[in-house]
Length: 105
Image 1: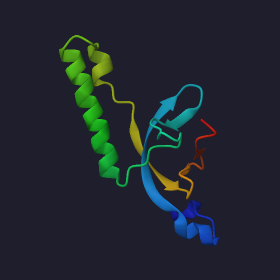
Image 2: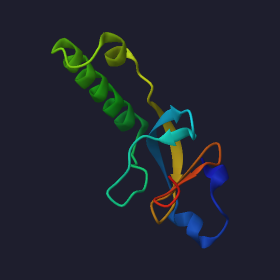
Image 3: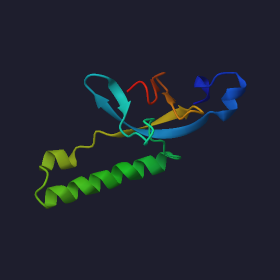
């Protein structure tokens, strides 16, 4: 996602990462997970984020099978993976220019 990186020395500290996103009615697309410090949780690869979504789906299916969740809820996958630029402070900027950090969500 190099187009979002500034041209300063700090650009060398910006890395690519992946977040699991969900669309919300109020705020639109937002990262679905946070770290203990409040920043978006970053996965090092797209596959790692996709695997987390798959594990969550399997967990929901198990909840359906044990009677804890209804079928539609268990089978609906609303999460998706977005590539993000990770700033040195752990905040992120996605391809749409949305900035997420501990102070703004």
